Each structure stands twice: as C-alpha cells, then as structure tokens.
Length: 131
Image (cartoon, rainbow, N blue to C red; front, top):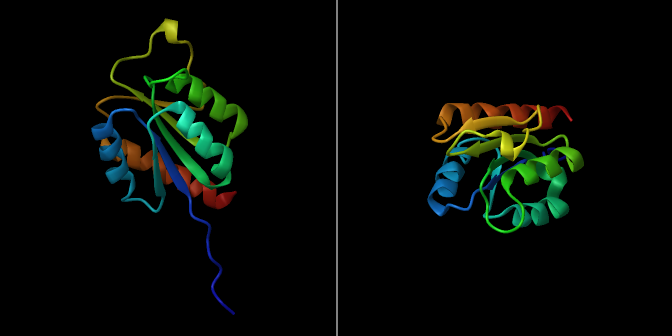
C-alpha cells in the first residue's frame, strides 16, 4: 500500500505591483502552501473557477487594474468560495466610499508585517486540513 497523497493547498496572491507580488510570493513560499500569482481580480477569478477546491488562502490588494478591484474580488470569493481564508491589503486605510469589508475578511494596511501574513496563511492551511 502506498502513502495517501495529500492534495496541495494554494495561496493565491492578487497584486498588480510586480515587486510587491514577488515579495508576498517569496514570503508565502515559506509555508506549506503552493503559491499562485495573479495581477488582476479577473485573472484570480479565472483561476478560482478552475481550481477553487485547492485554494485555501487569498491575499489581495484593494487597488487592482481592470473592472474589478480587490474589494469586489473578496466579496465574490466570500459568496462563492466561503472556505477560502481572505486577507485584503492596501497602502492606505479603507474609507467609507469603498464600502464595508466583509466581516470575516482580514484587512492589513501596507506595509504589512511578514509575521502577520504568515500567521494568516497558517490559519488557512490548518482550516483547509480540517475540511
């Protein structure tokens, strides 16, 4: 009998700034999550439509190019894929015009602390193991 192969879990990073996305990817590669990068909400949704069962963690910037911003993305993810632990980040505080962040979405203002991101990713990986 062979060993059971545990499905891999994915951390999906959605950030349009190449350097910031690379920094987040390098950080999350230190976890047991496979890192997938997207530069827009639309690209992230395309990935989620095909691989949502594998995604445990979403780390998304508020300001993204194209039609959807990060807030639109996390609202969609919370509705369609509620098991995905979600962190929203921005270089500035959220204001009233942007609307409310869903209550189960963590907000981290940039520059975020590496330890906080790693802790959220670990919580996502643990929750994924239980499901």
